[in-house]
Image (tube, rainbow, N blue to C red):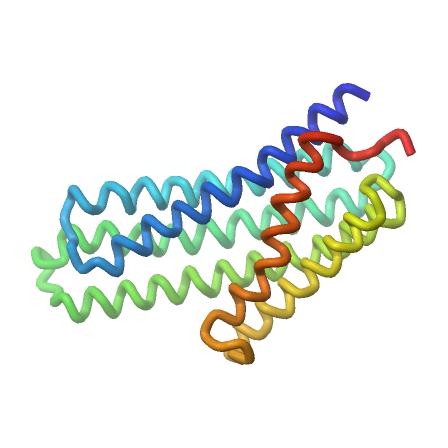
Length: 220
């Protein structure tokens, strides 16, 4: 089925591109906000980063739409549930990014608004905390829905059993990490959430490559 193979490959490309858009975009924004060098020239990279993060929201939404397109005919409930989770993820990530964009804009005119650098840094910290909370909420929804989705793929064998099993385990680890972050439990230090997200990140990259090369198996 050429159409399903093509859609599978597009989904694979989107999985991989999401790393670049959100990861590098977040790095650019974070680097600017930590610099204390707030001017128009330096802010350009932060704005580009924020736009990349917003593009990521579109990317994850399209992933949900395409997966729904592939599976809705015979598995409408699981397809709709995964799409709904991706919609929540997309909006959570976008909302968090908007908070960051607001303080980037504020940083360019804070002196004209009689705001001290200390107050600005406090607002930056607040925006970063909001982004952190929205990010974790979006990722928790994604992780929980992905556990169910890859359990479904394991049962139906649209992916190799071993790959679906790794997906279930990876997203389970990711979900635990997010919950620990939200509860403030740093059992692995300050980077607990990051450490426990690594298996999920590696799996999504491998999955992306697999889908580009092989695609979902609709002929099993």
